[in-house]
Length: 287
Image (cartoon, rainbow, N blue to C red; front, side):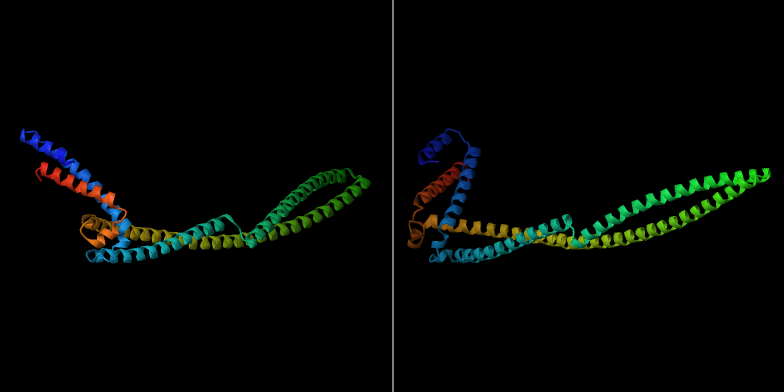
């Protein structure tokens, strides 16, 4: 608000035109702009106010807070690096296999292929034995008939054939037992490999668990450090505002403030106009 507008508004009030809410709203908006300008000015000139005694507390507090902020930022960078490494470690552990695990899985695959061949061989032996048993049972029935008929040559020939079949059946039975023993041995080896694989996987999970713990701790540390940074930034903004307010009010009456404000006089002029406008709006609003 300019002086001319203030005079016109006072004249309007004399005739009963009172815009109190509007004046309060304008004052609030201008005060917000003024506070932002004070903060910007203070952030720009704070390094030049070391010699201003009235701002000693603000200046040295800022020096202290900036040092603390830099230390926290360093810690934050370290935590973020730890977090990235932990994420990469977890990804590698969950997505990769150790050499021993790969070897075990290859050995297991070979064993399973051999067991499948042995199973087919066992089935073939059992099928042959069944066929021989079936033929043997037929010859046995034939022998009973021939013995009743008294056909000597045919009886001897049938007995000889039955003896051959018994020998074949015995060989097949022994072969089946050997294959069954090989299958049992292979199954035992597969079970042992499965146990070793389970131990390997458990070891990977344990290592991944350590990475998960590191991730959780790093996230907690990062959250804490960011909260500390937020608090420091808030304190610094308050100190910047105090410095900007003091320098802008005393730039024309204090040599140290004048030196600090060099290059910012146009901004200070705007801030003075805003203070004057806020004061006039407050008077018009009856505050």
